[in-house]
Image (tube, rainbow, N blue to C red; front, side):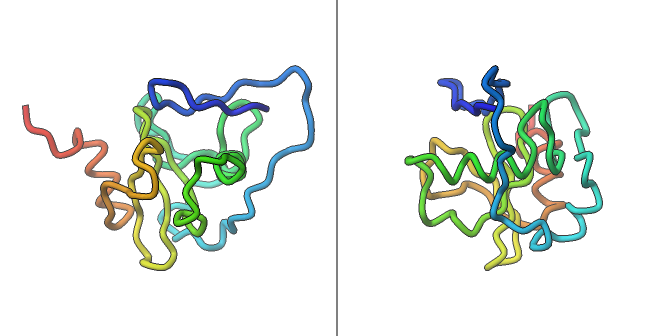
Length: 137
């Protein structure tokens, strides 16, 4: 498996013809709150492309274990985010993570470096995403 960060800030997974050993995360699933783990192992995708909880492991796309393992091997990945357990993908380039030090979920775009742009409870972030990011049209 080969993960690649595209110019449009989307995390894409491509299957490598070379195969190889499965990636593991080093981030314990036990650190995630029940609100997230109850959707494992299959994940939670309330609308197309929006995985509020990625599958735990999935050879066909970027599951939680693969995403966490891959991010931590990237030279651009901020040291300040090492404790974050990444569990979701909003489908537009932002990742959902769990900050165990604050017991809060965060919304982070890798282009923002070590700063995340939204934090709150898991339910608050899910509502924010599904509600159009607080935009009124």
